[in-house]
Image 1: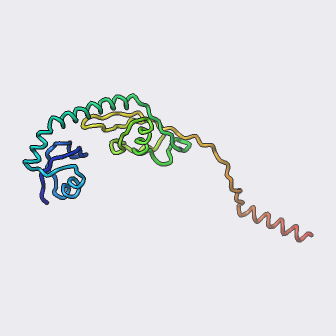
Image 2 (image 1 turned 30 degrees about the horizontal axis):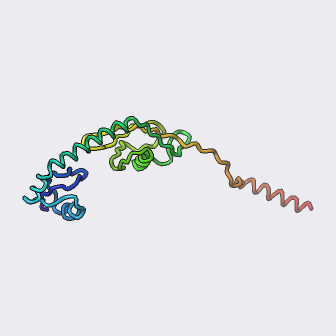
Image 3 (image 1 turned 45 degrees about the vertical axis):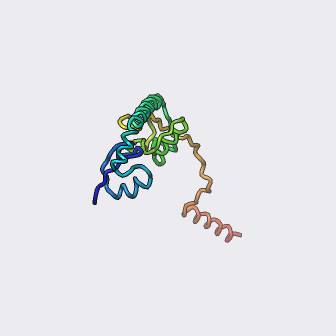
Amino acid sequence: MSNVKIILKKDVNNLGEEGDVKVVKSGYARNFLFPKGLAVDYSLQNRNIFERQQAFIEKKKLEKKDNAKQLKEKIEALKLSVTVSAGDKGRLYGTVTSTQVADELTKSGFNIDRKKIELKEHIKFVGNYKINIHLYQDIYSTLDLSVLAKVEEKKEDQRPRRKKKFERRYEENEQVEENTEA
């Protein structure tokens, strides 16, 4: 397996940011990064192009960092609640996932990708939880999440009660006795 040197054209999760020079496996570069337009091959010509754009790239990074800090403050001030079906003892029917949290954040006006929401463990019980959200580089926000139980009215069993075996036999015996007397 050979490695190739690349220059990132866009931010790539778990790899780097725009303008970074990285060494990656050739298959990863050839099959994923190059076709999606996320990187270019490292050459003197490409390096010179990115050096000329370096000031612009740094300005964009600062803007992203400032936006992430503002978003962090807004998210930490938010109290989010999710209502889910639960049993009598507070155990949920299923779990609360990062997708559900992302949907609730979207309803509140925040567009956060579900992959940036870090759940330490599956949420299976009603209660209050602290959830970390990765916003940018080393900027994390903590979200207060309240999981509430959905109030469901107990439905009466709409099926007729099934008779037990001995009740059916007793009724059959009574019918037989009535028929023999008549």
